[in-house]
Image (tube, rainbow, N blue to C red; front, side, top):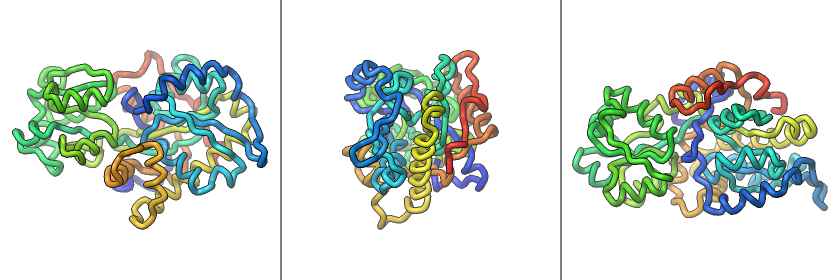
Length: 364
């Protein structure tokens, strides 16, 4: 998902989905408190509500991550209002998002492919209507002490990094990030099962604390956490999608999806089309303007989800994502996505995606 990872023109318009898991939705602490309230409103959001100024009220859930940026850009640039929509944002997690959709508490959820495929495997009648981000913005961050002892810097080659990690202690707060680290290590002949000691931790925040205390030497998670640790002077990011192409959109076929209930899409096709159109306008704007240092629209929008993160870290994180001009998906992209998810070993048994589960018909 990045302007810095060149992809063929046709590929950029195909689905390139991004792994989910808990580390993919670094939700705000309020999410756990919010979920019960959402679920008790069962069915309350199933229809549409028109505001006093004639706009259709729509509630959308996001994970409080870099992938919420297109939603915030669409709001900041007036694309939602231009489509006659008034948006309410709520923070959800990979676990609570599908349930909120099912209950009707939200009409749309900005989902990872892992979360979406897992929901389908449970029989939830959801449908992906657009891809709004391409790539897998991961960072492998090592402690400052480990970097110094192994002479690692942000410019160290991937082979040098992998060699240094042999015999180290890594942190893992999700099955996905552990598997993604394994993909990188195995490429350079390091067996993650035999050459790395793993410490299981409950969250990326716990990974960070364990690294700072010396319990682990390194961990992998989504940006902006690794880059912020580096910015604080507590570690060094030694691998990212630029250095590990297996994590990038072109090879992994990974990204982010706009998901809704099939029943909602069938009942309100005009609203779904307006919503998808506004978000596509936003990703197209991001594709064109992100490299313009004088345009701070995207930066300010991203900071609404990434409060307190330094400007330079937000900008670098945004660059690890390819923001598509078109949100359209295709079967080849989904095949690549499913192959990547299968390589992680975290897909539910029998999980699959068919043409009944995604559509481009709501895109402009």
